[in-house]
Amino acid sequence: MDKVVPEWVESRFPLYAVSSINSLYCTSNLPEHKIVDELTVLVAIAAGKGTLRIDDQAYKLEERSIILLPAHTDAALVAELPHPLHAYKLAIRGIEQNSGSAAVAMMRSSEIASNAAVHIYADEPGIVADIEELYTHRLPVSEMRHVQNQIIFHQLIHRLLERQNTELENDEQPSMERSIVYLEHHFTEKITREQLAKAAGVSTSHFSVLFKQHTGFSPSEYLSRLRVHRAKELLINGSSTLREIALKVGYKDEFYLSRRFKQHTGISPSDFTRGGVQQVAVLLAPYASHLLLLGLAPTVTITETSEYVHTVELHPQMMNFIDIRSSVEQMKTVLLSNHVELIIAATEHLREYGLNAEQLRVVAPVVEIAWMKMGWKEHLRLIARAVQRSERAEQWLAEFEREEQLAREQIKNSPAGEEIISIFVIKPEGVFVYGARNVGYVFYRSLGLQPPALIETEIRKHGDQFHSIPVGLSELELYAGSGSRILVIVYPDEKGSTVHSEQIFESSYWSGLPAVKQKKVDVLHVDDWVPYNPVSVRLQLQRAVDLLTSYQ
Image 1 (tube, rainbow, N blue to C red):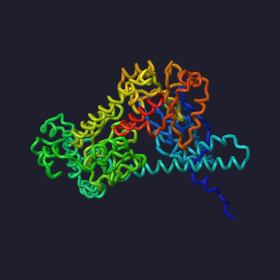
Image 2 (cartoon, rainbow, N blue to C red):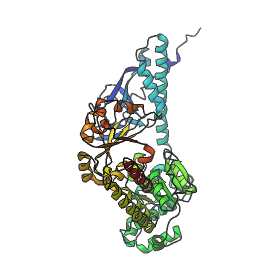
Image 3 (spheres, one colour):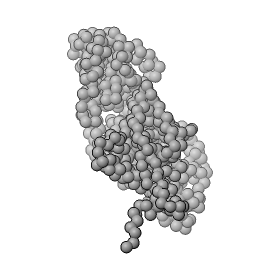
Image 4 (cartoon, helix red, strand yellow):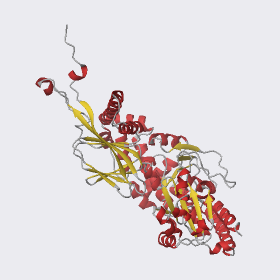
């Protein structure tokens, strides 16, 4: 009878084992953890956000992402404060099987342990959950639990190998994406089909066909769209001559630009600046409200939810929503099918979700309106200019400023006009004191009420850019001071609970505040007071007047 040999010994592949598993917390007291190990290390981000630093490189980390570090990597895990970062560190040992010198000579090295590159995989909740379970049961109380740990660990190894193999397969296949990225970043230069084919890793003869199959456009059409759409962005900005714009987008002169522009759009550049766009897409809901106010319902809104501002002033007819977590190709498909003529987005929001204007420009020109660097009035004016509705915006702003003046006079003549008002926002992750944005805008800007001294200093320094700062419980008195009234907003957690606020309200720090002792605390609803856009601010102004005059 032939000798039976176990398959996984003769396969010559290594076995894997957990060398160690640790839980790491990066907080304000210990914001950084060094990670140095002689073995391959898998790091799983269980909660929070942060940065992985390796030499002079920095990698942004999100919750549910995982990082595979080669052995002997000198790395540091740093929290994005004020939020703590919770991670698990799993050291992986590859065990080579010894069954004679010939077998040893034929042993294959571990694909995981021998890899010299850093691998970061976003959104891997399954792997993070597996590591969390391994940590929870790191000291098994029974052999059955021990075997279950082995099963979970080897399933985890299998998933890692799948990720690495997928990366290799993608690298070995022709990639239209590489040529697209090249086009998006070099469209102002002279580009040849040979350059693009080389970037894609395909022959020149096959490139155009494959490109058209992948994008729906020929390479020359794609290039023309990028250049004309960038020209539209510069025309909307209004700071360059037509000749300057032509040179900036890669055309030899303004005449050639005009000819290409008309071929692409059917109108001349001058007609474009005098006309108005109708099919507009926005990234995230706040700018959708600005458009609705201007009488233009967004054709497409790229957002996390299908929620938007509902008021008697706004009557959106039909809006298409794209989940912002969709792939770029999915977004492009929806935007193109809806014939979008303009995309409005904040630079910060694009960056937050791993997007950039270059990726979307082939669909339509992208106008970036900075979110935190300016206030809602500037947002409205820039958006109105982009859609040629500045007159309507100025009329609305003038009417609002008259309402502000009347409201300010009404409050000035009431007892509330002399009060010092502190605004605290309680979130699951902590307490924040608010400045001149969101709920603070109406009370401190519109009504001219007095904030605590420390907040007033920050508002003078940063203006409408001052949103909020985190505070500890022991700092509540410092920011509330002898303030005569406190406004507080409680954010629920992801399950809708506000129980986290109870520890604040029940603390001696809170109960010791003068306004709390005098029962001058108003709890405001988050949905009514946090939105930051023209329509919401106008509604908040009337709510603020009603609230403050109700004390009389």
